[in-house]
Image (cartoon, rainbow, N blue to C red; front, side, top):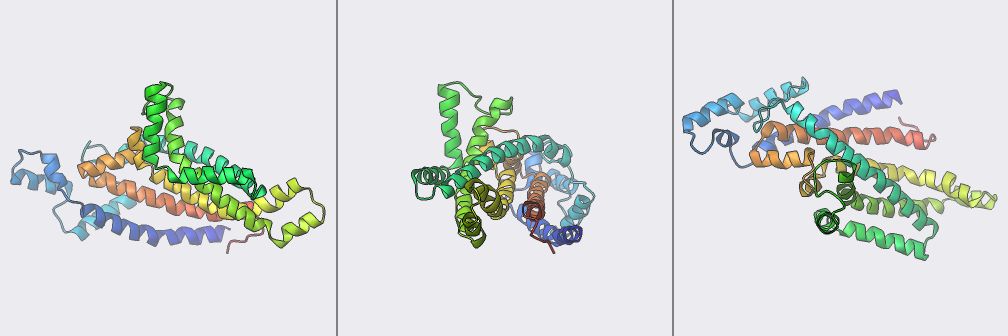
Length: 306
């Protein structure tokens, strides 16, 4: 296990290097000059040139990348162009609201999705299966931003039960977590159902039933445990998606998280913040996938990681 973890961890280095090159090139290809934005509309060309030198934007692109990569390795991410704060401070202030929103969204969507998928798999072809799949298809079909606006209109504007946005307490999590997690719950339900039905037709499940093992034990110990292996992969991918892909939901609900920060940073051409955020999201996906692979052996001890 430890040797596998060490090899996988070493394998993340070239991935992150390749991602960093792509991110750096993409960010600097964005239209607009951050130096001009900082200088203001009344600035002279000399003022803009001086600001470009101060921001380190005057050298060739490869030289800028090497300087940035060297600083990033030593966790020196520079200063935000918009606020002049250290980038790590800006991201640190926004990280926890996004993390908590992601955990709440992932928690309820995973429980609901797996439960609906198992019920649909056990009751395959019956009304419970049909109702569960109708809910799953409906959940996938609703755009997140449209659902968020609908929830705000109903529960905030008309009923006045919930705050329209911001992080002002536990009630603030209800609508954005539902809008963010509904699609995940729907995908989890359909995926769990498919995996459950596939495993339920395996020889060892039929053998357990022939031996007279109680149906509850067949479902929970023999079928669900093995069906969870592909579901774990989906869970890891969906968690990474929620953590880095909540931009629309955070914008709709004015959530003080990383997604909204990224939108604001792109609008201001805040290169240091954009680069740091995208690299953070990329590293999250890489390490979440590594964690999921290690979790396989916990769920099913017969799996050996080599």
